[in-house]
Image (cartoon, rainbow, N blue to C red; front, top):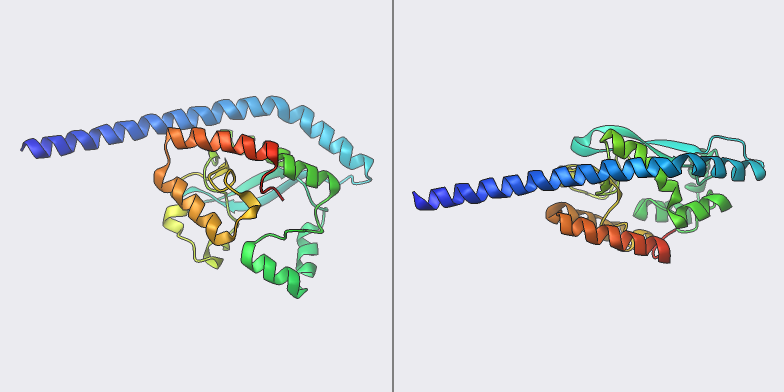
Length: 222
């Protein structure tokens, strides 16, 4: 009887601890999202003017469907870092064997010819991600979590849907702060799985600090 009471007590404590953590995590998301909105308007104007000066008058906002918590799709918004017809351009590039192999392996191109000069700066400074604060406020994403993937991407790399999609995807995460584009896709998944299995307030704090360091040093950014 005493053992049962002890086990029940531990279970309740763990449950309460988890709920407190999730409350703090969500509160942090909302605060960061609101702060991000303050910088979003002037940054949007500056980016738009920069593109216009280069003769590019297309929309500076890029929208793409991603898969979120419990496998539910949502629209992810970022500042455009590529040429306006990037999707069509990719189809042409993948006809070349060197690009096709790299894309199938990492879902990225290390020297992607579609990225604009302005886009290259936005990526390396991670400013292209700021637009995601809107999605964070809406509750579809968190500030810290696994990177939101496109449909079919996880299957292409034999990923674990139940684990990967058990929490909200993040603007930054364990992978983003520990190597970013400098890792293989398999290593990337292992880093994301590690966070999901061990997520905690202390791990989030470490992730935030390491993300700031990675952005400042541009470590692994491409």
